Image (tube, rainbow over all chains, first blue to last red; front, side, top):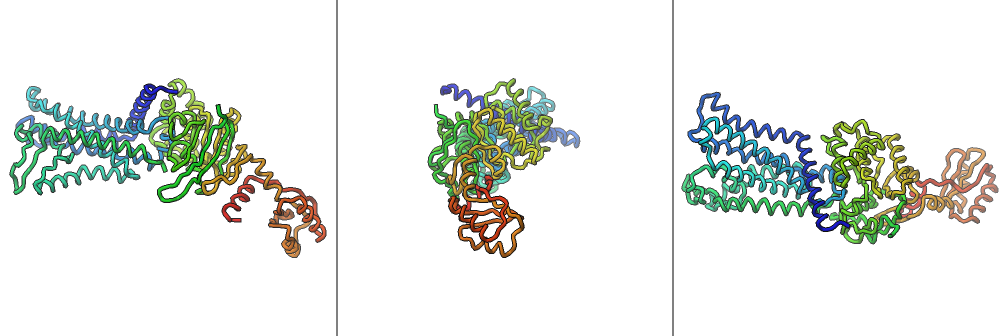
Length: 274
Length: 315
């Protein structure tokens, strides 16, 4: 009979094995390579195009970094869809669950392992994106002009990865097909939630509870602090524009990450392999 | 310590679409037994196996492995089980070595043991040369061999196999049969679901016949054969039967059914010795030239058709 402590240790070990195994799969499927290419090519374009065409770079390093990181959001959504869209639904659709679930490990270990593997993969991609952007800023503006908010932005981007990943895991846990779960996650984050945000804004309601709205903080941290303090009521084009409040935005992202992760695990663990 | 390896108590599974797959199923399989699990499509064979391997939960009732409730402590019971359920998906971009290494780790095997055992099981299922090749290039039969290797990897006490020879060529079938016989000699408990009655009769000592989620027969293969054998007689005739003679056979009320293959007449009757004697006398009195007259040899297929026919109303 294994003690409670021994059981927990074994579950942690199984989670580690599952993470390792999933990462190996991401590598073998070349998804990681595709994402790495994206993370390298996008910031290089921001540097190479103005250089080649002689357009000239932004006046300040903040503007350069901010416009460059404006695409981090999109990159995160693409990568999460790549690494996690089929994480749970794929086990059921491709019937790999028939092998993995009939082994002496808790399903929670398998799913947490999958989550951690996807998280690691996307963290690597986002980190690479930030490193290249920083190196470009150093090259153009000098090391002394690198904005200190870059670290803050990086940490917010990682937090956003967690929330987006949890949302994608949630869809993956409720859908039977990999295509439907991946597409719904992708379009929710790329279109549906931003459209809802915009409609609420037009209606004069701040969409503070929508995670894609909170994601604006990733680039907003480079903007003036007055706008950062939840500057509500900025008039423009006949309706009020909103900027996410830092504290609220962070809590919303944490909320999405934690609540949806727990829900997806509960649903996935209880699903029968029919 | 109980000598029961697998047991179900009133095991019932009703799916969300209303299908009652298992209806208060009660089975007991002793340690070291090799039991064939037979039944028509939809009888509940795979459902039973999925509950035993913790892939689905029963609606009510219990399933036990070595006396432990599968639902209450699945991790503990799955340590002792090697299973093959339906046609599992395998990640095609990985190699057998990578997949088996992962499962070896899950089974708490040491790196050295995993490396050694991978070589052994791949040799047993005859795909040693493919250890480091991507699974995407494997044929159906090779995939089947790989998942059998996965089931054997941790040298389990109990093997639960669902259609293990599915997709295998005759050589592959023979290999699996030999593997099962070898495991039997090592006193492993084997629970084998199959559509291939020949496979089951070749490898298993006992058989469970399942229909509509219930056990309709559970006995040794020999005893089941004998039960059916007493109701059949093989008659060898000197000459081929004429149309008139066939009509005469049809007129013998003691004969329930009969089948003619060349000079052989297979008679189905009520199984009583008196009736057998009366049928023989009648045939002789009608002028049939009989070479031999004896109880028929019965295959497991005959038993299956006889039992399932009565249950399903086919016969």
